[in-house]
Length: 340
Image 1: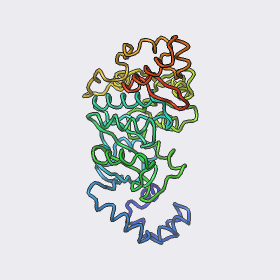
Image 2: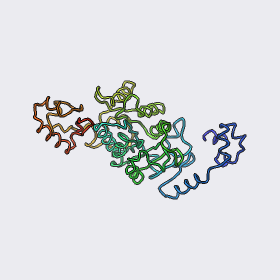
Image 3: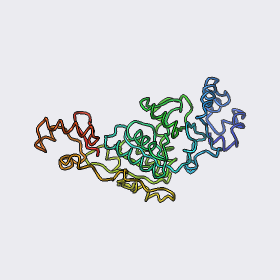
Image 4: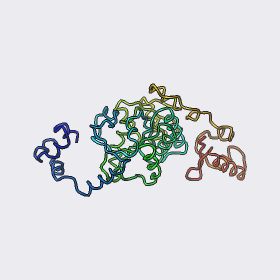
């Protein structure tokens, strides 16, 4: 599309050019499809989608087109957008990470996102389960809201479990994507989507990621686009910390709280995060035995009993109270992890 626009100047001239002329710039099959025209059903679906005032198509020629994307090597010729169009040009930070996040990772992502949103940065992520969803929730809870960049057509919510979150983003933030309406969730489209997550942002924070995580693709895109990369460290025994540790070894900034990011970006007009930001005092008083025995490592009831000498009834009572209070979270396999 960019090649054709560069050759012909505007879409109308592309659509009226002869197939042989178009084939000078694109494969013949693409030239044939252009000459064949848009299927009536697809055109009707797009027209119906645009009847909703919350929906827009923003092209390279529009003033609402994200200025940040004009700086990357391969900006999309158009974006489908639902929600607040101003979100495309707000100062933003990408927060990404594992879909199979730990309770601590989810808590960190949401806390970082809320603090940074209140400080003046919109939160950009990919609407995936785990860290992405937590980042969106935190961003929406803060003053600057959140923007989701999707890897499907914007008329499809993927994963379906995030339907309520997508609805909240449409009402209070925004969703955007470059793929045609009706495009299903295809694996190859998500790495392509990741360049837009980083491209829209001033920097990229990776909260939890295994070595082969797609989040590292977003981090690499950020580096290639000249964006800052930040990573949250974790336990040396956790597979979900190894991707972050690899980034730190390669030069990403290790961050412990939102202030670390704001100091690195040094943007005028951003406010300091409040006391609720990550790095605030831990609630060790809730259960003095947990920090002494485990810190933030996963544990089970039997191991806790062995470390503390408590009987099973006392351990069960303690774990129930701490889970209700939000100090620990249950993990698969009968294990727990301290999250506060």
